Length: 115
Length: 113
Image (cartoon, rainbow over all chains, first blue to last red):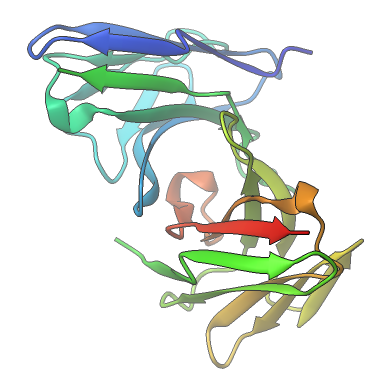
């Protein structure tokens, strides 16, 4: 199994540009999420989804949009990139509330630089 | 936003020694406490997790100690090896799934020969 696949691995944007980070999982997970990782701040939740057609905001949602049209895909859109969005972005998925294991499976990340 | 406080920020341990990373939480509704391990250039991966009905969980060289009254939990790595050098994150969530999973700020562990 491929697990959680993120593309691209690296991206450089200019301030004001828009782009979409792609995330796909092949484990039939109901729950998918996006985190950003910044030095000294750990992993902060941007947006999440508990199923197709259902999305909600996490801790740091401003400047980002998401949609979930299928179980497999959960793209993250940067509407107008700002230098403050320079970060490493991780997509993660899991079964939702299965009561036994809440193991999150992470992708390998996208390193984004906004100039 | 619920908080999980992690310390130290960085840790250097000699090969064969014991590495200890500590976390404290505030929300008494938390009932799931995982530790994630992250190697450079990779995404975090679940290492070990504990529920508050036990005070300790051991998997190989990795042990979680849990103190419910103090609202603290810690990761102990016995016989630390250079391959354990990584960043470690503690986290916590309640019975509402991963949408409320809160991570600590991470500890960069370096094991020296």
